[in-house]
Amino acid sequence: MSRIAITNVAVFDGGGEAPFKGEVLIEDARIAEVARSPRQVEREGARVIDGQGRFLMPGMTEAHTHFSWNDQPSLSAIQFMPPEEHILWCVRVAKRYLEMGWTSAIGAAAAKPRLDVVLRNAIDAGECPGPRYLAGSQEITTIGALGDNTLPHMPFEALSFGSVCSGPEEIRRSARTFIKYGVDHLKINLSGEYIAGLPAEMSPFAEDEIAMLASEARRYGKRVAAHARSSESVKQCVRHGIEIIYHASFADEEALDMLEANKDRHFVAPGIGWLVRTAFNASDYGITPAIAEKMGYKRELEIASESLRKMHKRGIRILPGGDYGFAWMPHGTNATDLQYFVDYIGMTPTEALVAATRLGGQIMLRPDEIGMLRPGYLADIVMVDGNPLDDLSLLVDPERISLVMKDGKICKDAGPRGADAAPRAAGQGSREAVAAH
Image 1 (cartoon, rainbow, N blue to C red):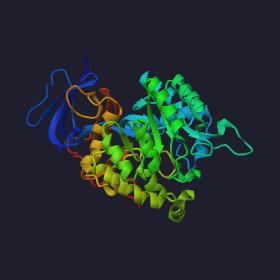
Image 2 (cartoon, rainbow, N blue to C red):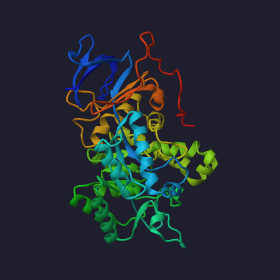
Image 3 (tube, rainbow, N blue to C red):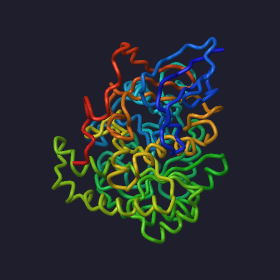
Image 4 (cartoon, rainbow, N blue to C red):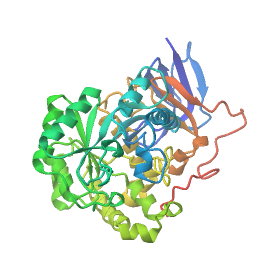
């Protein structure tokens, strides 16, 4: 049996209480004991890691992950990457996420049909490092909507990063095809997206098409996730039992009432970083703030902030993550969402961390073994040099992520600091540009 004792740390267990000075004992893949100072864990036969006062927290869950988005400035650049290079890209990015403390992730759509499935299987088999992963389908879309990249003179399916369907039977075929490939859940684009040329408040799918997808998912025991910016698309998610809702920017009072009445069933991962970074930080890639405002992103950010604040007050579960992997919001900077949750949604830093940890276990369907530092839980653990509750930007700085464990195995270890080298105080050192604008 492998035994590791992590001592002399400030323990944030994911439950929302204040951190406490203590120790954690890991046996094989699970947490065996958590002790509050002055009590100590049993150390016999254990490797002892002195945390030197650092912050110890559960591994985080990215709830809206696109590993196959390739840090490029356009949707077509994502799709045009050849499949051989594309899977290698996904492997490299998965390692980046894990080393930044994201020990679990929900696939929010793959750019090609089997990228998510192949990556998940390779991670599970131990062939490459990465977060515990639930694989998504391509984005199921319709003609002219987000994900349909075909041109009038080039009507080729391979041009699109979505599966383009029209009518219930084409939806059925697409759903069954992805289920055959082995996805954990299906993804559908129920609203528009400004950057794709369709207004975000537009809802392009008919009810019978959505009903078909939901029916096929239930038949095979799969969940569904939806790109749903418009108010009507959020209501469609609730009506059809689509559990994972991405964006929800324009949710009106009726949609909020529906979500609140079903809040134990649904999760919202708004991808607010996309709105902030596109509105204010994409000038180098041709989207100046003036252009972003004309496209509609500044207005959407203002409305989404108000809607999400109302959701948070109503107790609707809101999780971080979303659309990282564009040039102006590259993979690895995902934790900027946590500060945006504070600035735009009104969460406290503690609530933002709970959203990334304890709620992550819930969306991963393993609430009793992921997302908390408590006995019996899987040992997905992150040690941070400094206190993220004082400065959430620490979680975007790779130098501050001192130690990462997944299933009790050390995936990243920055090494011992010297006996006289105390952890840096929050606020010192590098800060990735996480300010809104």
